[in-house]
Length: 286
Image 1 (cartoon, one colour):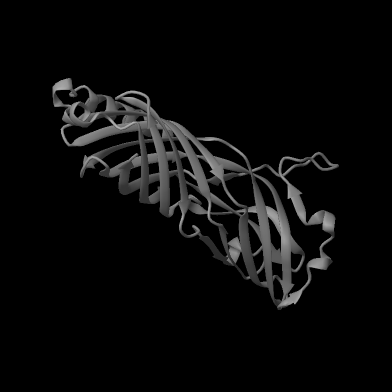
Image 2 (cartoon, one colour):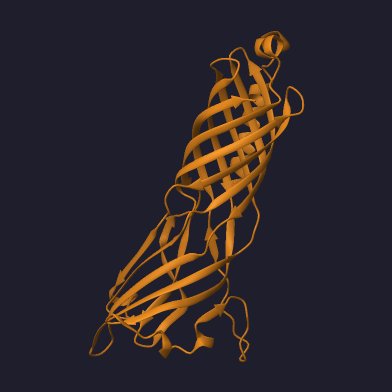
């Protein structure tokens, strides 16, 4: 899916470039193309792919399970939502340059779990929870290709997505359990992601306001999925009373893909960060 989108972005940009001509480059001829620029913008990122979002860490009378509990398939990304973006670029010649960008969410993307009946019977009468990560950020070094059409520039960029993300925090609550158990169980688990590189690319255009300032808009794609490395139980309450010490310390942390004495292992799962973004802002020529 993401490869197809990157291909369409590239074909679209190459098509626009085929209509470029030196006679139209008034900005290049009159002012010369600026060598450096700084861009500040706001963006809205939508989840790129539909998948099963995994929820781990469900409390019950037996402690806190670190088995993976699946929600219904949905479009999910921990980088979705409103973003603040900054980028610095350097142009080697009139058409090719490099850019170093950064994007961070203004609020955490939170996903919720709410199951009951037969789906929850393994743990209790009803299981509720939420999972999120605090202020994820991505660094995006990219190659930039651009051209000028009168007062409008067109550009494309292709590069890497380097994640700087926090741990995934999951809060769970289970009410009741099979039998006569009417207790309320609460838990918090923290999942540490394993570092992984992604891809980044976009198409956009700028409108010249004057020699120094441009307005710009951009459509971009971030293709990034990380894997869970380990999960640790940090809170376990029964009717509001701290019961974390009832879970042996060695059983509070699960390392994914690590085999136990019986040769069994819990497979690591995918943590989604892929997005399709709409971006708009101001570009300053330096």
